[in-house]
Image (tube, rainbow, N blue to C red):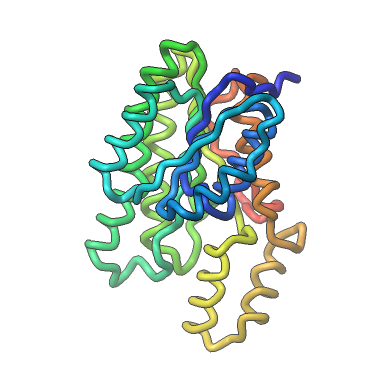
Amino acid sequence: MDLDLTGKHALVCGASQGIGLAAAQALAGLGADVTLLARREERLRELVATLPTDKGQTHGWIAVDSADTDTLRAKVQALVSARPVHVLVNNTGGPPPGPVHGAEIAAFEAAYRQHLIANHVLAETVVPGMERDGYGRIVNVISTSVKEPLQGLGVSNTTRWAVASWAKTLATELAPKGITVNNVLPGSTETPRIEQIIDNTSAKTGRTRDEVFEKMVSEIPMRRFARPEETAAAIAFLCSPAASYITGVNLPVDGGRTRSL
């Protein structure tokens, strides 16, 4: 099985922690040169120094807020002008929890800009280089809410579905060029995001954090949350040469929690 990404350049968003950081580490482990993208420059400088370089890789970073569309486009355009991106991992923290009824319009606008619009801007910027070099992988880290809406995540559910539809359409359009577009759908994962959801649920229901945690775990057939590196392994596979004939799929990495087919 060909998992070798030596000579390929990966841009990983949300790479300062959680699934994004784990994905960057996994891709570097397969030989890719990795550019980390997140908001905190000091944190990115520290993390770049920890990535594997045993295959002669050169790693870098871009400090930018993905919601700042113009700056995001300009910084990534400068990056690809120096070296094309062959692998794009779109990954951004989810919108604040809450019901869809009563949600402010501004919350939807902010979520769409941070997720759908940012993903589109990045894809439009990197795809020409993928075409020229004959290698392209785009993986969007979304959520299992693409298959089953999650209670208390109204704005997130809505936005994630929009990203999934965009990705499916893009996958069809880019398939003749050999560029794949896939979505990884994490379930409950040991990240700051899940802590936010637990805290929010505890505050709204009056249950303790332990009670909320136990309830969430009980709904997962594997009876535990995922580790970020487990989700990263699925991302890395879809970015590899071995996944060349897989495109347009939604892959849950959720310990069996999603009940739909």
